[in-house]
Image 1 (cartoon, rainbow, N blue to C red):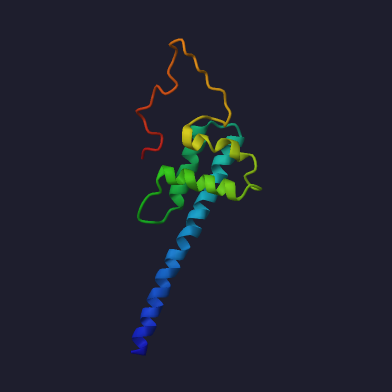
Image 2 (cartoon, rainbow, N blue to C red):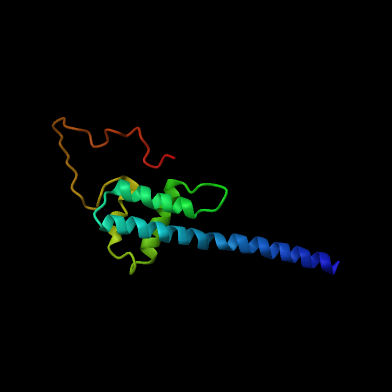
Length: 130
C-alpha cells in the first residue's frame, strides 16, 4: 500500500513538473524570438523579413506536439519586449507591426481619398496563416 502511494505521488510530481515547465519554455521561446525580431528591425530590415526569421526561431524552439501559431508567437515576442524593457529598449516602436502590419508605430499612412489605391487591397491574405 505504501509502495503504491509512493508510485502515485512520484507520477503526480513528474506530471506537475512537466506542466510547470511549460510557461518557462514559452517565455524562453518568446525571448529568443524577440531577440531576432528586434535585432533585425533595429538593423533596418523590414517587418516581413524580421517576422519570418523570428517566427522560424520560435517554431524551432518548440518541442511540443503542436506547432506554435503565428498569433501566439506575436504575443510571446510582445510579452518578452514589455517584460524586459532594458534588453529590448528600442523595440517597442516595432510591436504594432506584429498586429497591424505597419512598419513603425506612428508611421504616416497615405490616405488618398480621391479614388487612389486602397490601403487594404490584399485583405484576402491572412498574415498569420500557416
